Amino acid sequence: MKSLTTLKMLTLSAVVIALAAVASVTLAPAQALETVRLAPDDLDWGEASDTATVVDIVGDNETAGMYAYRVRFPEGFRNQPHFHPDNRIVTVISGTLDVGFGNEFDEGAMRALPAGSVWTEPADQPHFVSAQDGEVAIQVIGVGPSGTTQVEQ
Image 1 (tube, rainbow, N blue to C red):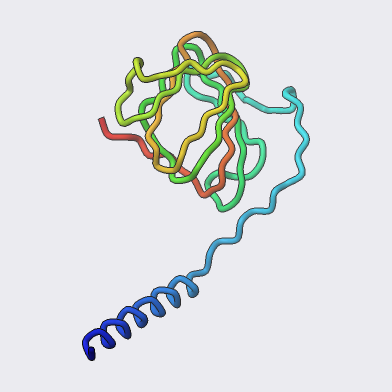
Image 2 (tube, rainbow, N blue to C red):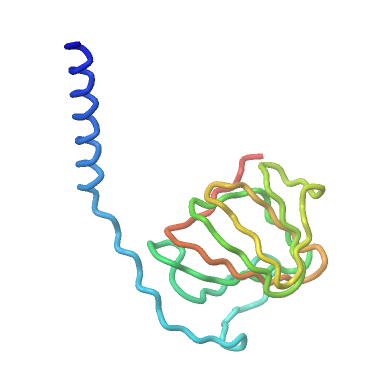
């Protein structure tokens, strides 16, 4: 009986210490969401490129808080398997993007998503994309901080 009471006390002590440690961590404050009204012509895409081009809409995906940005992929662009630490919702704005999930780029596992399509990218879920049939634009919405980790091939 005494060992059971001692075990309960040790468990309770460990929980209290863990909660105190969590409570003492200062979390970075999230950015306040800005008021934004943008028409497509308001977006500054910069120079055309044979790689992905990104334009921020609101927020900063590298800091705490909500963010949204658009990405334009040129025809023939392939993004190898990678993942992000945050949950994301992605919408195809124009074109058709082939999207797949997994640790290896597998064209057979991809689904063609035309403009208006939506997919989710759960945190740490490897995925890959391809713009085979022409230029594609997508919009990504998430809550940062974010980042990109390539899957080792």
